[in-house]
Structures are given as structure tokens and as C-alpha cells.
Image 1: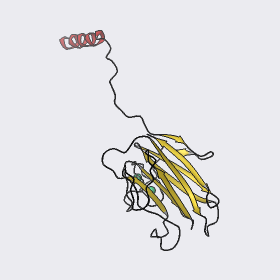
Image 2 (image 1 turned 120 degrees about the vertical axis):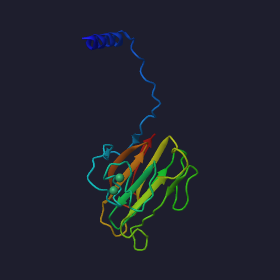
Image 3 (image 1 turned 180 degrees about the vertical axis):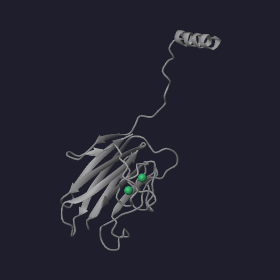
Image 4 (image 1 turned 90 degrees about the vertical axis):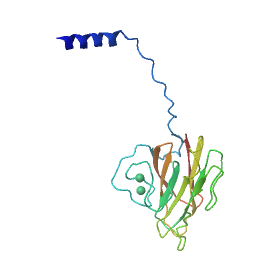
Length: 194
Ligand SMILES: [Ca+2]
Ligand SMILES: [Ca+2]
């Protein structure tokens, strides 16, 4: 009986307390897709399909990292483009300062590219064509607009269209898109804001 009375008193006290102000949150705004080509669906909901498969530019296990454990570099920002046709596709990423990394040459912000695949023999990609750009700098990645272009540099002997899978990891979110490129010079542009 005493315990019940104490509980009633405690509930009454809680009931009399003025409502607490909402907690202050310093959470950063989530990354978002700022621009995508017409007719291209960009999926921002990751559905796990099992273990991570290599060189498909897809975060198969939805752990937020694309193609980890495959010998690729990964980072808090990562973009990957994968294709299977014997064509030369370029992944061109501009960081928020507008700088684009080239193989072996990082941007001032620390964005690197660790593969350049041409779809030809001897390109070092062993038929697993994937280009990969990642943030490798100190501290958190730069905020702003990250621009990504997927370009068919040369159709070569491939039968069009060349299907390219684009995976993006920005601000803790994963994005996935498929593009079809029909002729040399054909390209699709995306922008991610974070
Ligand atoms: Ca993964
Ligand atoms: Ca994968």
C-alpha cells in the first residue's frame, strides 16, 4: 500500500513537471541527391542481398561501404562505377572545391582515384572494370556539392548500350543508380549535397 502510494506520488510529480524543451541536436543534415539525369532512378534505400560481392559498385551487405574486402580503397565518401562491356568508361568526380582526382594524383582535399579501367587487355583491371574514387584526407570529408559524371569515353567493340552501375556513399548514405550509355561521349551527370 505504501509502495503504491509512493508510485502515485511520483507519477503526480512527473505529471506536474513543466514539459522539457526539445533536446538540442547538432546532427548534420543528411546527404541528399541534388541532381540526377532524366529517366534515371537513384535508389537511396539499401536492401541487403547477402555477402559483399566485388567489383559491382553495389553495397550488397548494406554496411555503408561499397565493395569492401575487394582490394579497393574505401572512405567516408566513395563513388564507384562498374561495367562489364569491353568499353572505356570514365568516372569523373568533382569535390566541393571543384577539383577532380586523377589516377595517382589526389585533390587538395584528399580525394583519390585508385583504378582507371579502359575495358582493354592490360589495363590492370583483369576484366572487372570498375573505377573508384574515395576520400582519403584527414578529418571529415569536405561539405558541399559533389558532382559525378559517368561517361562513355570509347564504345570500342562493345555492343551498345553499355550498362554502368554507379554506387555512391556520401554523408553516411548510400545511393545506387544504373545508367545506359549508347555512344562514345555519352554521359550522365549527378550531384550530391552534403
Ligand atoms: Ca558493403
Ligand atoms: Ca559489392
